[in-house]
Image (cartoon, rainbow, N blue to C red; front, side):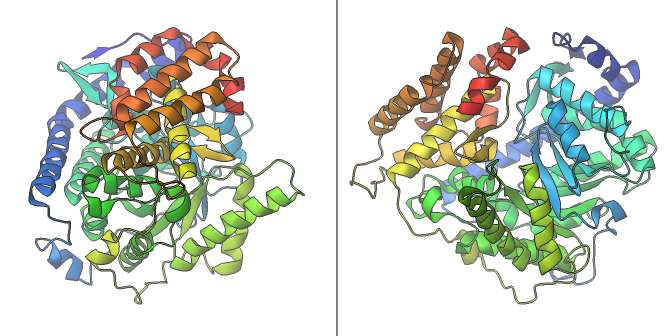
Length: 546
């Protein structure tokens, strides 16, 4: 087992985390399950190849129909601390100590402690993040409530597709999710359990019930190793892939001793259609800025089915994150307009029966909690079984009508470039046009640009075809705008590098499955980690302007 030296400035935190006992635990955890993680990824590739070769579409599985038809089984009872989670804080990258402290001081019911979509997995960030969580759990952060009284921590390790470059186990890089999960459980699991506040997790990018089965095996093994009762760990699975939407009951069933429910979001899920079927003309996804929202048939059906599935099995159903940022001036038309828009969209989710959802802006917590107080009764909506819902495969696979606008194309290019720029700066999310953008929005942005080039889609505005030349020209225009806001040569150079990498991604012959995997394996990103955290701090000012 090999581990990289500590990142500069985190020598004490590194020593606190990587004790002899922790090393032994991580070695056993990773060596026990490493082969099965590889099998999961190989099965994904095999299924994708079969779909491509056959032209088939996903359907509800015949082999597991007995699970869906059995009306009796339920998940284990939901712990008291999870029964009322109307509003969680999303995209909470725990390496940001001050934001973590503000989140712990907030009136939110929960915090998505995010090592995935909202986080950039540099070694510095991972060590800082896990140490900050450890301090929060042990009440060592200043001016925050006791962990039993603070918003509940929903720990979100990286997804299966991510590796940890800084740890080698038996000659192989460690799976990112096992690195994160192992450290969090070893240092925080027992304390969270003793205070009836966990350990609770979000599981990202799960595609099939066999992947849920692997997580369940990992939970059982870990609880036995750490002396925790079976069922101590609870997990919410994010249904972020169209294939998983056909296996939601099976996913709950595999995790029934450890399930806290399922979560639905819009952008990773929408991007998965391009991932799995993007080369097919029938699955051309129109401009997301104009034609894609939770009111569309394919997304509404997915949310309705998720709520129905969860509630009939005694599990919680949670919605996605409101990415809007409220203007700081509270008594303005713009503030009222943004708040009204968020309320309208989140009320759709409440009406569908969700038990909670997320916000990024802490100033949205109380207005959204007020929505739940007005429009629901009790701690959750488990009583709403949604017997009125009957979702077919056609409902889940129906693409919305619509075209492509120049505005939407330029917006997608900007989000893609700026996300890569953020990663090269050591940040997992950024702000653009009064919204927070993370890997989920970067995923749908670059996916749409790739697909529109592939299908030579015409713009609604002027009938120009979306081509490599057009995307390159628009990217150059964007660079002129953005570089004018950069105040150092280094920042401009980084932005140009991000633009080059974005153009490389959207012009690939074969669609790169995840933008995070692509970047995480890229030499440019890996070498950028060696330039030190001083550069990251230097860029904070202009990044806010971008």
